[in-house]
Image 1 (cartoon, rainbow, N blue to C red):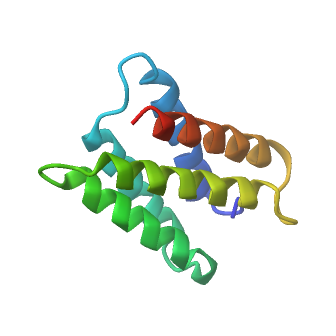
Image 2: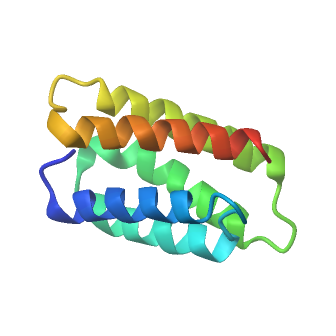
Image 3: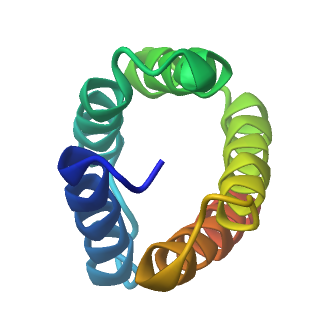
Length: 114
């Protein structure tokens, strides 16, 4: 990760959305839009299939008539863990690493409030 312009743009957009929505929260519709963007950015990267599966699960929960907040919280925690692992990976560098670490913290914090 980090070499794709689309991935970098999604990281910026995601960080911005969570920071801007910090006061009022991020709506399920905003979450689905972000997930759709990430799925597009990660498309074709065989190393990201597990991440794509979790994003699809989260997308499904967010679109449910009665979302399961416990399941969403677990998915957010798992995504935070994976993001942290990628940030600490041997191929991470520069501002990309810092952005991923910030995203990991934001996801973990947001998930803990559900």
